[in-house]
Length: 273
Length: 302
Image 1 (cartoon, rainbow over the protein chains, first blue to last red):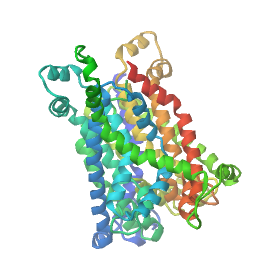
Image 2: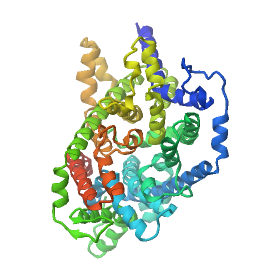
Image 3: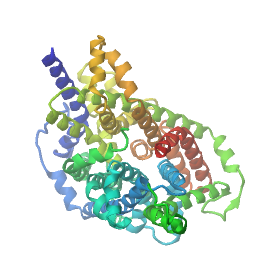
Image 4: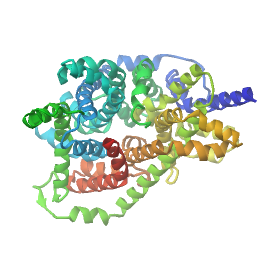
């Protein structure tokens, strides 16, 4: 009975996971063929003449390579900013009670609800007025605005799981708040920091709307826009589009696989109570 | 927080500053980045504000204008359909997979499946859009699969340019991308449920569905609630996927509020009108999530 039960669990998992993976497998399959083979009937999963040509043409295009560099610059900067601000705020919110704390928390929660398209209007007007259109700086600021609220909540929840006795002991030993924060709170909250970092990195790497609104040249535009433009421009070159999509997704999958232990722990820290 | 009583009166100001200084950088940043822009949008929504002319105060004209636009109501309807179907679909898929992963199976195997099933969540909307546009193409994978199981007629459909089916295609892609997060949260919730409850229900002779409805779901109540509200918020404002896959078409069949606002802000350059509609979106979201806000802040008091 037990073994039959386990068998059905595995079977259902394999079937469902295969269905979920289908679009990804198809994406990879298309990226490995010449363009005239994309819709060749009957469709086949393994390309008849597998080739890396699509990847080569993507890598040979300096504009497309530029998109990768832009995405890394923006995502890393946003991640750094969010980790810095969110860990400090998370500690403050989790450990101290002070006047106005509820109002501040309410504000953080509220900002999580802002429709992005709402913020994009004043951002566009402000950024063009002060001459920051087409700059990394403008995009990093805009991205931080929507990644920060959730980061703060994540860090607050995570630091909340660290026993208070630790910092009370440090206070008794004469540590100041800042010292307590860096030497007592930061080390055990590393998983939470990594989780927040991975989360903001994914968010920033995948952002689309602000990038459309705040830029119009390939010099600063991130990958998401590059792929978006390809969709509009030449949906005929499906193999290249899929090759680029695949290459855009690999960094995230690697980050996730390497850091998932921390990521999953940190993401679910506060939600399960 | 214990406070030492003897220096309470002299040090309250310093004490307050010391405590608040940790949250201050983030709060200042947030207020500058979201508070001020919000204020601006509210202001703009009461003006005739476009690039062509100087802003003129117009009272609530923008608000009554969009309320009288049938396309606005169409966008609202589509937004609600999109949100409801995405959240429901994601919850069903997420819960099903979370329940499967929570069975007593080898923990390594569970880990592998959990990672694989998280993959769709990692893809950007542009990639998701591209992949699904390829699949939903008239000559694409879906139609080929439909044909090979004998559904010749259905296998001819141009999914994304079909007036009724386009939204179904977009919802599919959206559920595919969205369910992993729900699965992850629900799995985390499932793992906190005490085994005793299941043993007790086994002794009482409960079947699968009885256990699901009388033990599992009630225990997941809080997390289900939080998750549902968060997902409603995220899907209600979603933009990228629809914008990329259909651009709101065909014939406005997939136009949602976000794309509607975008059209007026960045194509028509009618910022006042777009602002008013965006404010409407925000109001709906805040109202819908008042309960979540209350619950989240309630945690503060204990």
